[in-house]
Image (tube, rainbow, N blue to C red; front, side, top):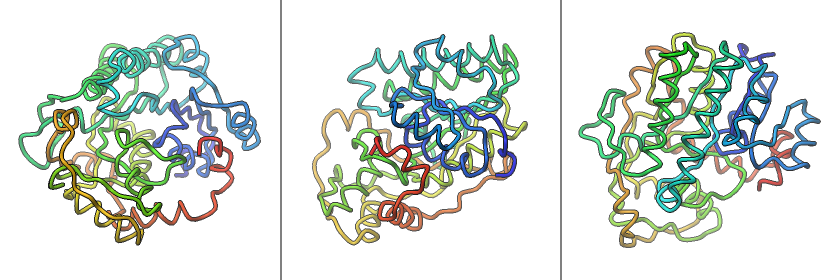
Length: 330
């Protein structure tokens, strides 16, 4: 997007799945890019410096480190955090520390030292919990079933409150089940769809809980990045919350079948629901994306099949210089 050329953009969590793909686009759009992440090694820092990307090794739970990072930023993508419903239940205090206290550190740093900055925060469809009707609009009641969903809702409300009380230019995008190119195999509790693609490429077993009839709204990471970029430059997005999804529901087992078909390898095995997974299950979900289409002019470009095809091609092709600079994360 030409609007980002020369813009001073800071991405917290720039080495995460969403962050890497966003930074890749920002790099090629000519942004003056800074990446803040806990997992930046000396080698990655040097490699990014060679690409004129500022790399900041830091922890969002450290307020001083957040303050030093944000001073000159014009746009911040607040993507740092812990992922996974199961992980949040296993380590609730750490999840709260990162997804609550850490998120608040960034907002406080902006309030005190950079009030003109724009901040975009990624919410989650897990904030809704079990829904009453489909598709799900932004004003649907939220009753999250996991601490992860609760803490993402907390982060969303932090951003909206800082808009209301302090006038910060914040907005929230609630994403549903993103997938696509990534630098390392994810554990299934973090991103089961990417995990399934990895398993299929290894000709392994894709284990589906129960009959796999639960409906999900899968969205390709390229569409996610487009939504983030659109929100980052739009004044109309300030103080708003948007659902971001494909707007299409797909049964989980059908999605697994598409993966196996596109990859040409792997097989599906149906197993009983583990108790914890069943307790955290949120049921069917399809995003109502009417609002973001109207306000930001965004809409998804990729079907489920084309998104999986693009992911598989990416895995098989040689990475470009940007991805190669992060090779230690593979």
